[in-house]
Image 1 (cartoon, helix red, strand yellow):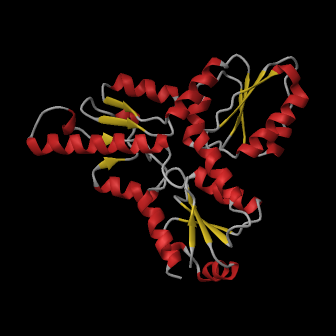
Image 2 (cartoon, one colour):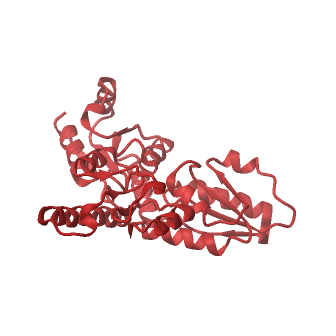
Image 3 (tube, helix red, strand yellow):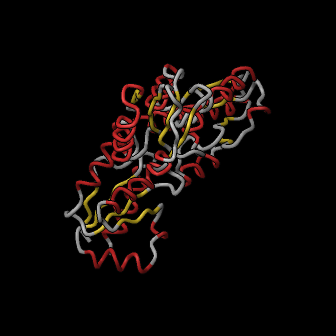
Amino acid sequence: MRVIRAKSAGFCLGVSLAVKCLDREIEERGARLRTGAAGRGKGRLITLGPIIHNPLLMRSYAGAGVVCDGDPEELRPEDRVVIRAHGIPRDVEEKLRKSGAGLVDATCPKVKKAQLAIGEAKDGVLLLFGEKEHPEVRGLISYAGPRAFVFGTLDELRALVPEPGADYCLAAQTTQDREIFLKAGEYLRARLGGRLRVLDTICQATKARQSEVLGMRGKVGSLVVVGGFNSGNTRRLAEVARSAGIFALHVEQPSDFAQNDLQKIKAGGEPAGVSAGASTPAEQIDEICGFLESL
């Protein structure tokens, strides 16, 4: 089967920087342990949750000795903590700094920019478009004032009763669907007028991926989106494709294809499109492309 691979598929800049940062820490820690040198190599290397949302890559890091779910309350001065690409809440960062452990900030620059922008607008009511339990969202909310509302759909936003006379700020998780965010802005401007400030916090990499997927409509018989099942931006790529009428599947590895899915891909005709989330390594995309090409 012929395959068209999206040019934007795979690591974004923020993820690439975070992974390189952790790889460098692993290498330096290994060197110190091999030579018996004192210092940070003696403690644990911790990420307080997945540095990126890719289970296959995280299994590899676990094999290299990275502790994914360390407790901030139990850190020791000899430990080394790498802040994940999604960022962390402000209070957690304060605990890390007070612990005496070594701290490396691998927060995606786009996420950090969004955190700071929300912090500057904290006098009003924050309306944040995102997944309530996502680690990035928990971090973003921690920079807001005491009044913040997270919504995941336009229906949830419409159910909000505005406070009389209050100022509002609309922002989004950096990997959210841009079209829904624009619709949310239109709805709120009509309702709040000059009391609304909009922060365009959706990153360009997310916009590019979603636009490229939409551009595949009519050019491919099906679309396979590669990446972690726990990756929000990867799930949304598949959702964007389906909303455009494209038959789309979300997989991590070849074994995730059900037989009836393969039949639908073949029935859709050539070529098949392949895209991937911002936390998907090139090797994982290569594997799926090779599998499809062998059909």
